[in-house]
Length: 378
Image (tube, rainbow, N blue to C red; front, side):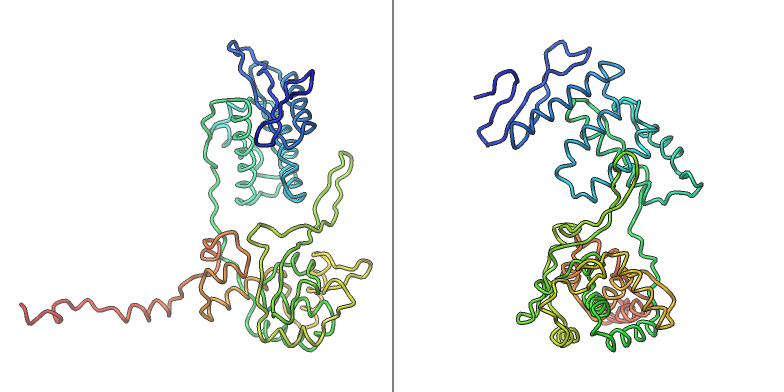
C-alpha cells in the first residue's frame, strides 16, 4: 500500500517506486518521471531533489547541465567508492559547472564539446591538461548527458568523446642493473617491514595501495597464496570551505582487482622468516598501524637514493614485474588475472609487444618458394 500524501509504491520486486509529474511547458500529455530506490525514504529524498531541480530551471522546459549534474552526483554517488565520487565531483565543480552549467543538456553537441575543451585545455597556472585527463572530463560530461536524457526523457543524440587516447606504452623501465642493486638491498634488509613489503610488490606486481592495505591475515603461507581484498588511498575531501585530504581503506580498484596470487618460490621463505603474526599490517606506519601510499613512496625514494639509483615511481615495479613475466612466457590470461586488470586487452596493450629480433626469427621460418616446391608439376 502506498503511504498517504505522496505517489510512492512498493513494487513486487521489492523496490520502491515514486512518480513525479514532468514539469515543463510542453508536457500537455501528463508525462511522469519514475524514481526507484531500495527504501521508501530513499525514493522520497530523490523525488524532493528532482522537484527542487525542476523548480530552479531558468527555462521551465529545459534541463540545465548544472541541475542534471547535481542530481546525477546525489543520486549515483551512493553507489560509488569515495575516490570515484571525489574525482567526479571535482570535475563537475571545476570544469563542467563554470563552462556548461547554464546550457540545456539537449544543446550540448559535438561542436559545444569542442569549444568546451578549448576553454579548459589550460589550467589556471597555464599548464596544458593531458589528453587523458581531457578525455576523462569529456567522459563525465557524457555520463551526465546520458543520465539526464533518460531521467528527464530527452531525445538526445549523444556526441562521441572528441579526445581519443590509447594506452600509453611508452614508459621506460629502470635498467636491469639498477633493479638488481635494488633487489639485493631489499633482500639484505627484508627484516624491515617496508623492505619486505616492497619485495612483495617486486615479486607479485601488486599496486602500492594494495601493498599498504596488506595484512598478515591476507597471506596464507600453508597454501602459499596472497589474497588481495583491500586498498588504501588518499583522496580529496571538499567541505565547501577548504579542500583537505583523507586516507580511505576500501575494496580494490575494480572487481577484477579482488584476486588471489600464488606466492612465488623466491618470496615464500622470506615471508616465513619474517612473518609477524602479532602485527596486523605487513608494512607498519609510525603513528598508525598501516602506512599510506605517499608514505611508502617517500620511503621507497629514500631506498633508491641509498642504492645510488635514479628516482622512479613505485608503480614502475608493477610494470617491471609484468614485463619480466611476458619475457618468461606467461600466458596473457593468467598474467592479466595476477595483475588484476579489468580485461585482458589492457594487459595486451601495455605489455605484450614483439621486438625486432623476435620478428626476424619468425620471418626466417617463412618460405615463399612456390616455384621450387612445385617445380615437378610445371
